[in-house]
Image (cartoon, rainbow over all chains, first blue to last red; front, side, top):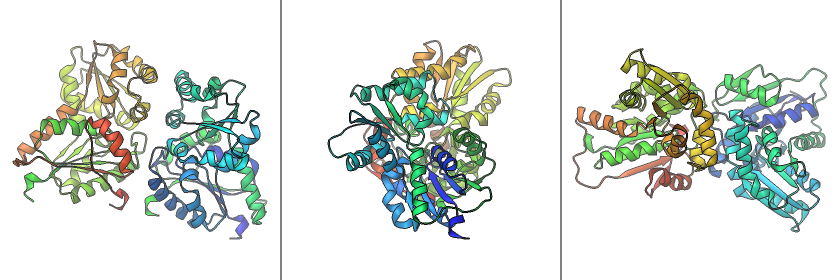
Length: 271
Length: 271
């Protein structure tokens, strides 16, 4: 297969990365894509970094088998715990979600006070603190908060009910009290909760979803490596999961906001 | 090793089964035990039955390697989806958590109106409906509700705060409106949330935690097979997890309400 016609590989611990896939499909409608969601072992956010690394290695081997031309780590937890390992073993360009998010947050802030929310692993790793300081220097205030219940909320479909708002208030009120003007959504599930989150943060705080900017980085990397798909045929989309294909299809269509027809099951632990 | 001195094997998708282990340790203080928690792939409640079966087979093979004399399925989801398979392959007596819970609920109810809560898999399987009707006949009203957020709440440590109460109210109010006098806690995580649950249900509704009765069944099965440990030495307790041993130790001690010293990591997908 001509290298440029090979698909872009995108993976996440589960369905959250579909919010990134949506942006990639929108920005690069000519590209074939393969998505893998590790729904059989989701969520990653509270699991140990060593476990995340083991799972990630298996997923990269699976994507390599699919002959992907570029890998998108559409999961902040993996980007935080294992991005260097993916770069080491991938053999193709790798785009992760931390740097694009950090860049967007730095551009958005006026008062140089940024809030960052994510899973326990992402927050503990302090990867966003390093990424933001690398871009903006030390003279910037960053306030972090792990929001472990947000992924369960998103997967329960409670995107903006009274409980979602109460949980958002519990997690976010201490951040708001630090006078932030920008809140970085450091988990690919969180854009689904934007209703509940903005109900708490109000109009004065800008919410940063890195998905669009990740798509820009994908395009830049493909251009740099001369890998933009020249095909005039409509692209194809592959969906793979480590759990039930029915569940993926049903919930995934809601996340992606378009129907997913065909999902295949993968025994990922054999990779 | 003399058969009776072999340990009891207990497993769960994660830490919830420690609430059952606690009862077994208390009721049979002379027994050695081995506990496996699949924290690397937790939770099981929303995953497909086929995935649960695959994971369960691996765990049973691990427990067999530990030469257990009896297996306790300390997880309602596995009891609902894979108890027959465990019985087929275990080669030792098997105790699950559904029947003991159903028996306790039937004994407790006066008005023959029982509520059952559990994970999505447990509720969808209707295993409690069948178990209760097997014991009490068809002339009994059963009202079910899946409570997928309860496991996340228990693992977040939000056992009885305002959010736990709001979520409990959301899930349980429709059950209460059916005039139940008994509520079966059909998930080994739920006893931790008894504060929030009883805040909603009030004193008139009896909450059924099967743990104690599971311990009774373990004792009966050991007696029947002449496997009660005659040793006068203090017993030993083995703890194994598929994820970080530190996290298991820290959270597990809170669940078990006593310190856990030594936890070992197992690559369960290799079994």
